[in-house]
Image (cartoon, rainbow over all chains, first blue to last red; front, side, top):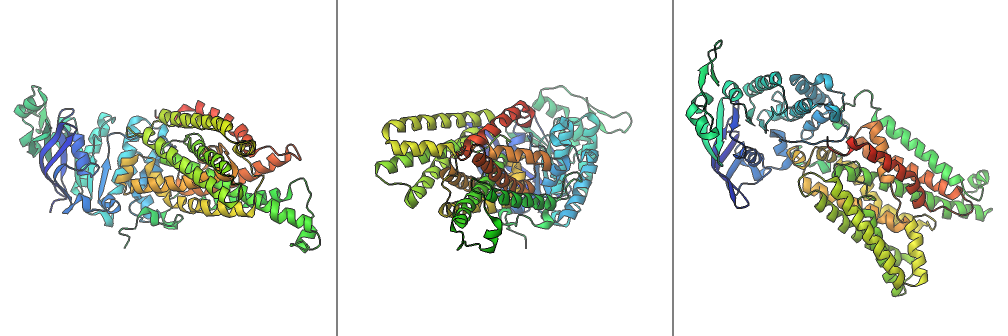
Length: 258
Length: 362
């Protein structure tokens, strides 16, 4: 049973057919990257998969149950979502923002405190724990928000062995080093049993860290599969209209898109 | 076993839910105990102040006042209901202010600024005018009619403000304030129009009541206030976690398991009920819902499980003391309470507007 399953999903926004014929399965331990040009429907797909929007046709199943049959609270224990933009102007401290991720669990102050610290350390923002959130820089805020959604489905916790993490452009605003660190962290979390789907713009990050890549083009899935099979220069030319060459990395030998 | 237990069903001060406060935030228990203590002192002070000096020794010896009926009457029938009414209204205004600010994700969303209070007072004025035309005076029917009118006016306004201000996902401050402005202007216009329609007696009552005051406080009014405000005072703190989550945004709150629509509906009904009761009983008392949560947020941080009860206690304290001030500045005349709070609150509101980063996203 896959953690997240989309079958023949279709979404119409106004007259425009926004997404059509989407089929995908996200399994435990998988790190799936959604790629595609602007406006291809990546964020829409995240919103459908997270239940924020309802599909006009087709089915979305979370852990084998249709999304609509989950209560909000139950769903929040297994599924955490990072939206593209978050605005928070109230002077919460960073640790309090991360602590909001524990709201669905009622697991007690001590357990929550430990998980908050773990998630914040994993993202390198523990040193900012007592800073007011509105005073943080853009990248720091992004990492605090990431720590919030991670603390919501942190894998070691007994209640969320079966966690699903949906991230809409989690690398936005992060510097290069933090992007790579984030991908390594997500890889580790997936190895511990989380199912992770994220929207990315950096093809090389996807190539290097994902084990599934979905390429969205004009509202449909143009390709879905392991990154080295999907990300060919023909596909990149067809979807992004960019001439790319794929070469082995001079040191590691792994493929790199140039 | 916790399945299906919605946030709304949680007791609001469940100890296991209180995340560790940062060390420099004072502990919740200390803050609430301290504020309760201050409120009790304030209540005692308010009972003791007034034109007539009360002989406390005699009153304590003979509380029902067979010997000194006049003093007992002043204490039990005049001062005590008035002080309790001030406390209830202050608590309700401050706590509903804090809740509205959470709901709108904006520290300026006070019921008196976004037009809920104007809407409620508009509804109440219409009722006063209508009743006077049918020859119904003050009394129970008049008071409940006033509350019903205020509730309806407040509900329509808050629904309107919420719809218009949060149309595009986020909450637009400009929209919120402009809708408030429009409703206040409409209320002013209708009030002026009523001046032509109603007789002198009704007109005097409308204008006196609009200034805001507790002059006619009675036990009956205290009862009304308790019935209409206690739901908000007791139930709003239960939504503390949902309000915390809502500060992140509506969809974020949904992803945290909050039933956003239900929470919004419940909050708006509770808030409007309490605000309408406050408006009907004491007229427009502005800025309490703005000043108190703002000050407390600077001190305690924005977490609602502490902010809401602390706002209630501090609001009660502030209004009880403001009423003492209103009674004692120009004795034996009384300054209308609404005027006093506006004089104190408006400058603070202006200074708040100057700190733009507090309420406008960076």
